[in-house]
Picture (tube, rainbow, N blue to C red):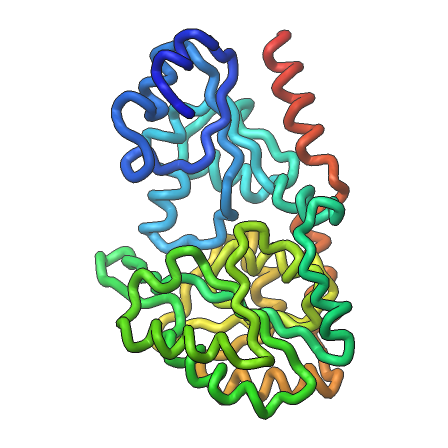
Length: 312
């Protein structure tokens, strides 16, 4: 358990900071400015992926005091490194492109939980639906836009799910998914989760759901990039009144996904995929290869860089 006394006694040379939100997640006695004054070298590995380039997201991803407090920031690729250099005004040597540990955790299958979806539902296609919490974003004019789909689209789809007799739907929700929802909608979701062909996946370690999927449906979430690791069709579902702009580093991959804004679009996508009509397959695979590689050695590269930097 964290305490000031523990930090003073342990005297770490390097400290990893999980999230870049000092103003939300830490008080004055455990924020990055406090640690910096103690002479601790601070390291940030993006806990998500910097997919959005709307002004509010750029501020949170690159421009707060948190980033200027970092000794090292490890990025997914050269394009994301250049985004940090462009927006954060940091020394180039403090930002290192190594890949993302997220993909190491996908590479090592032995660390998975043990649901065995493929064994239990071997005669069914497994469709993973990743739902973010209700997310509003401000544009450059300070106007709020709802970036995520209306949750009623998910409700209505799950109500229709019985027509897909040969499918299991794994509904993978963000921990805050129900926080911005009416009690009536929450109760409706809970009722639908009792259906035989719907599995509400709540574990923090969501990798097994990704591994066992045959088809992906996702809204705006860093997980949509992790889905690109797999040779599976992906539908990007967004709000019909606002299409969130994505950063240059991820735009090509996301543009290789199928896209929908309504219930009809979801059904059309599923119909085509269940018939084997994944026409975007080649483009999606090549786009991911240009984004990053998955070799299971990202963490090793980070450790090596820290060791070399400490011993310069």
